Length: 189
Figure (cartoon, rainbow, N blue to C red):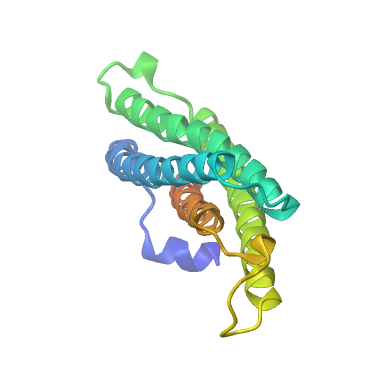
């Protein structure tokens, strides 16, 4: 796979890599920031909805919210890391050769970003799977067309908000993975 990709992309010069690095990191930063903000808002709505309405003692949604919160923290770190990519690209574009980072330093920073994004994708995926299972269980617990008498089986907006927050986090972490992996592959040629 690496050889196939290398045949399409010419080996980068330092200036060309710095330009691409800066552009890609800018897009990555803003996409992750927007998707992360949407995730934070929907997760906060889910948490406040849960606290203000009747409790249903559903441990699945509670665990989904916890995993989503950890995913949000990882996403905050990842947004900072994408911003750090931009600063690193500026150092590469500097006319002062002494401030240029070494290739090993760039590879290490890209690998850290990739690992954090992969862990974030995993946590967000597990949280969204758990949340979807809870919503499905609630939907299947009530017969169709009959009024709901059991409050525990009502699908509430908080259930959907948790799923939405996790899906947005999967997207944000996926953008981080693609950014890090693409740049890492290109610089490693």
